[in-house]
Length: 461
Image 1 (tube, rainbow, N blue to C red):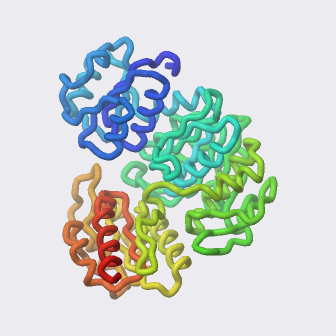
Image 2 (cartoon, rainbow, N blue to C red; image 1 turned 90 degrees about the vertical axis):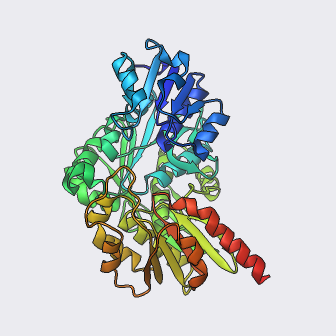
Image 3 (spheres, rainbow, N blue to C red; image 1 turned 30 degrees about the vertical axis):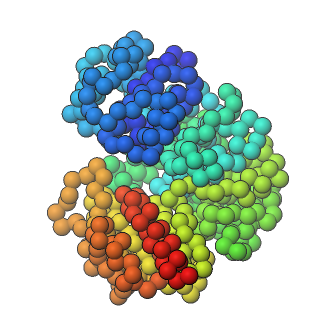
C-alpha cells in the first residue's frame, strides 16, 4: 500500500498518543479521518477541534457512512483494543484492509528519509529534540512523537513534502520492526516489557533486528552503554554517544541557573551549548539529537539556537510550579533506571532541599520484575509516598502490590496512600521539592497539587 492510495482512514483507539499523531498526519494531507476511543480526553478534544470526527461508544451505527466503504477506507487499530470489540469485528468480517499503527508508520517511513529513535527510555525526549533541531533547517521535518511537545503543543510536526521524518521507534509488541530507518538511534537497553519478551536477551535480539533494518547507506548511533551490551553482536557499523568515553560526547558539563551547559564533541565541536531541560541523561539525549542534525547538514549556529529554545515534552521533567516557596515537578518515569536518573538530576539541581517523591507504579508485571530496582531508586529521595499500582492493560497478579516495593525500601520516611487520599494529606508533609512520577493516571492529580501550591503561596502572602 502506498500513501498516495489512502484517502479515507478510520481509527479504532484514535486517542492514543501514537494513533492520534497518525490521525493528524492523514487529516493534514486532506484524507477523511474519523475514529473511536473509549473516553474523551484533552487529546481527543484537540482532534475534534481539528475537524476529526470522534465518538466514544463501541457502536457500528456511529461509524460515518463514508468509512463503511471497504474499497476506499483503511482501518488502523491499536493492539490495546480487545478482540471482542464490536467495531473491530465489523471491519474484520467485512473485508476491510486493517493495519496496526506500527504497520502504517512503516508505510510512511518507507516513503521518506527516516530518523528512528529507539530505547527503553529516552526515546520520546530524544526524538522530540531531533524534531525541534531539524525544524530550524530549510526543509524542516515531519515528526511522530510519543508525547506532547511543549514547543508546539502537539505530538506531530509536518514539514515540507521531501523533509525527513522523525519517528519514535517503539519496542512494545516489536512494533519498531515495521519501520524503514535511514538513521537509527538507540538511547538505552535496560530490560523492560518482559511480559512481551520473556527475558532481556530476547529483547536485545529484537533491538539488534531493528538496528539491522537501517538502510545500508544509513547510520546507526548507540548510547555508549548500549554499545557495551550489544555492539559486538551488531553486523552493521555504528558510532557511540554519551558523556564518558563515547566517540561523540558532551564535555565540560556544568549547571548554571538551573540549566545544563556543555560542549559537543563529534565530527564538529560546538561549545557552550545551553539545555533548559535538566538532567545528565538529557545531556546525553541532546548529544544524540545534535549528531543527527550535524549529519543532516545543519550548522553549529542553528543547532545552538534551536537547542537553547527546546522546552521538552509534557510530563518529562515538567515544571508545574517553580517559586521561592516551593518547587513541583511532574515526570513520566516508570522504570527503575528512569527514576534513578530523574531523582539524581533533581538532587543535583536542588542540593540540600528536602525532596518528597510520589510514585505510582505502572503494570503488575513491571512491578514484579523490577521490585528491587524500584526500591533502590526510590531510596534516593528524602521521603516517598507509594500509590497503588496502575494496571493499564493487565489483570492483577496475586501478591503483587505497591507494598512489595515498600517492604524492600531502606528509607525510613516512606508511606503508602491511595491516589484519592494523597492530595488531602499534603499539609502533613515537610518538603521543599515535590515530584510526582509514573506512567499511569497520576497526572490527573497535577491540577490539584498545583492548586495546593498556589493556595499556599496566597495564604503565606
